[in-house]
Image (tube, rainbow, N blue to C red; front, side, top):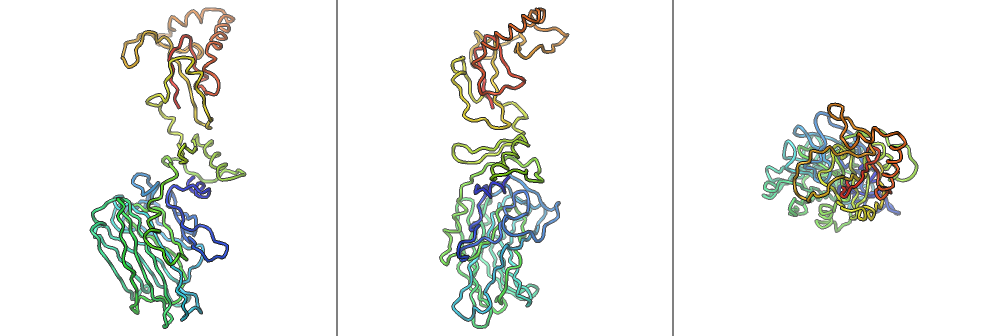
Length: 435
């Protein structure tokens, strides 16, 4: 459901920064995007390594936005391959003024939900037959520490770190990311410039200076991105990698996604979806078919927010009526603007309430019933006095009585659906409309 909505342009968490290729194939492009909403499959990119099913779970409670990947043991790992290769510097571009493509890796985490306090975003670089390099961002919330690495897998590297008290003090949803800019040098190796961005649950903004990695062990020869690896001990959501960013990309552009309003409200995922219905049309046709099949409702409210409610909303009656009316004129004035599949509206008149005052509790020994529903079973096999006369009359009299009742209750009909074959009664002066 979440993926269908995303394809239709409705997002339940921060969306891909640049989902489409522009006409000249030169603008920003998101090469990996995994919402982590109930699965590791990516909207853009392809899963490369998946953790064991018992190592993680998905939860809405405590999720940064809607639904989060939550480890059940420290240091759970998953990785994704990009949909398009990223070269840190294309061969033949050096030693010209080519400065490479700025790229941003980012994720949303909740430092208060999980089994640990660390998250790491790590990029593995294939050096085209010459080994492998890596660039990574490690955030350790308990230590208030941010560390950025660049080096060779299984060999040397260079590290830079900074600490902030805010990381330790503020538990909650954090947006973390790292911008890297590979700059060719005369020796044929890229001199990286790395910069970390973080926004906190209260709007706190933290960023490192531009850190130039000039040590020999930190340089990266011409390489292409092999995979993005996530290692996390806390609730994580909306992982993505975007390349070819503008040269002026900074904190304002990074934090814009932290403030983005959510356009979707979903119920707890309770029914697995193994196949998309065979329908023709848009994503909305598929969503409508899923709603019909699962006794769910899909709707946009007056604020333009999409809301999905599962079948469990029918498990118990509403605690209070949405609308209370006291006369047939008010009931006849009610209108239903739109019928929603699998959502029932019913009107239940309460007969014999003359003399009752609203808001007061009074004993009522009489058994209430609705004549049109037919005889009901009562203790001892006895029917209430009001039904004995109907039972003992000839069949024709019963039919005529029901016909008269139907005419009297015509105001209740229309577009309201009735539960249990329709409820009606004579002399009703109060009713409840619930959905």
